[in-house]
Length: 217
Image (cartoon, rainbow, N blue to C red):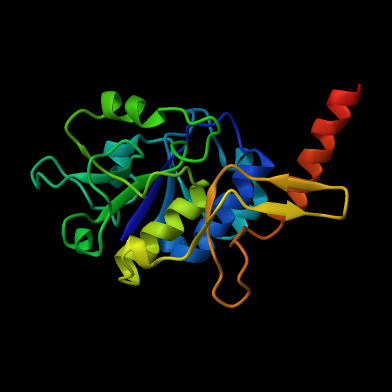
């Protein structure tokens, strides 16, 4: 299964870098590509951390990726095969049997915004007739959590209802500092805690402190 992030952010924030790094770790560098970067993008614009992890990237748009990366042969006009778009507003949930229907999942720049933004609508307009939507439940997820959930369903054969989640977890840093995140996360079976990218908890704390400073300024 190939995983594609249609990059819809401006540049690469620290948050995005950590999420992309985690997706690479989960699905493997050979199975992830970031597409639709600005046409002027060069390797110098890609964070060194992601390049070191083997990130594939392209300025090509979704329906032209295989012109640069032939191994991403999920779609040709002749095949008639469509691409699965993770869409919170889709009518059908993603199931284990969908692995037989699709070779590729599209995500990123789609889930994880709070309040939710219907960015999938932009993609449906951009690629008419190419994308088939599937839901991952009714709660917003971070992009890496969405990728991990799809990976569990399609490649570990764990149906959505059997995945252990926690909604809107509170991360407490000390007795006076805590942040509630407005997303759904998968629970780590070993630790019983939400699965986060390495360094994300520290970034959440920094962001919360910065927000407080802004309020007090």
